[in-house]
Length: 425
Length: 141
Image 1 (cartoon, rainbow over the protein chains, first blue to last red):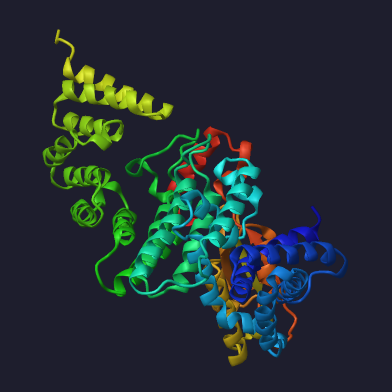
Image 2 (cartoon, one colour):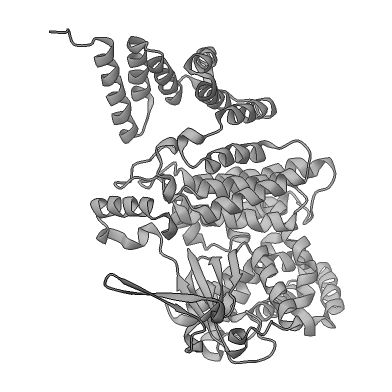
């Protein structure tokens, strides 16, 4: 790839979301807007290697895309009416063309926000939302998305084509939802971003335990969103959560690629810059007032760990209280299990075991290896080694991770030795 | 990936001349753009080298030399830390750094090491050793 091609790719990364968002406001169709932006990109790829990269590449791309739009509408008679609307819209913009970049900037925040809500619209499947968000807002290529999610390029391309068709068929308006709808729609956006982050943070497929580039993409999307809707505490909560979790990326993978659990991590390897950014984002969420949402609560829990210089300094009582709040806001057996661990750390293993015992009848946790693993740990701490061994063995049979299985079987073996200590003499 | 984007010093920055209102405004706008794009991680401006010092190492000896330092062009006046997807993206952003006075200047773009960058040369043993070293020298984080 030539230098110019790489430069164009970089310009695309920076400009594409603004370009597509601005075009979508004019043509009122995200799919068409993306195609027009793509046309402009193709034109750049043809012309820039000869002419050089223009001084204001964003304005160049926007101007080119607008001309393509006019050409397209003039040729396509079926869209004659739309053409009139568009011509009118473009004419009224003509005088601003000199200040094109500023003109885009005036609306760009609103347009980007409309694009975010459209890409994460509930009419789309989760997979489609993820692909469309990375494509339209993250500026990722089909190839990059395919690599990140370990699927083929045609699959991703198909997903995006179908998503755009679905949006058009459902006549999804290019707008920011208002009133009661806003909260639900915003949750959907946050969910998509956190999903992308988690796919990078705890890769569910493939050989890598983490894919940091995907975490960075999600963080970037989160930071962008935080500037678009600075008045929304949960957005800052999500950013805080991701910043603090990302601060541990270097520490949570061992020398041969094995996962290292939070309390065993070398805290000197935690990224203090990201921790500081996370704590600041959490403060922003808290300063906005109101009850903390689920992301902000999880960020507050992550912050407790981040503030502790050693595992022993961890404020488990506060973590237990935060899990309690989280359990009330977003009840789930997994949250309960985490709360049990925090209770055990704060008030002793017996306090945690009581809650864990109550969870053993929970159907959704039947195949969840962490339940017997946690129960085994608490039983061992209480000296009930025989029961603990059985739990570790059960956990080992449930986990799909080979490294984890080895670890659990080792613990089971230790319990066996403790349960039947060698005879003296 | 992260890049440190280094602003080289010039006569004015070394003389402690404060940036003009115009530059401050333009720079404020630019930084806002970086924040809105989710790119800016950190940024600092540095005081002139006259307020700094150097510690020279030679064998077991340590010699302290107070600023200012003569070779202005080699000094730095500030830096950004950016998170971007490629060096080219960092370059594209750097080209947009405002320079309202039209003065000559220079920006240096340097990629920050990530653990993976050492690749296969960093054997598990070496990696472990490096982790231990880092643990002992948190300043290097």
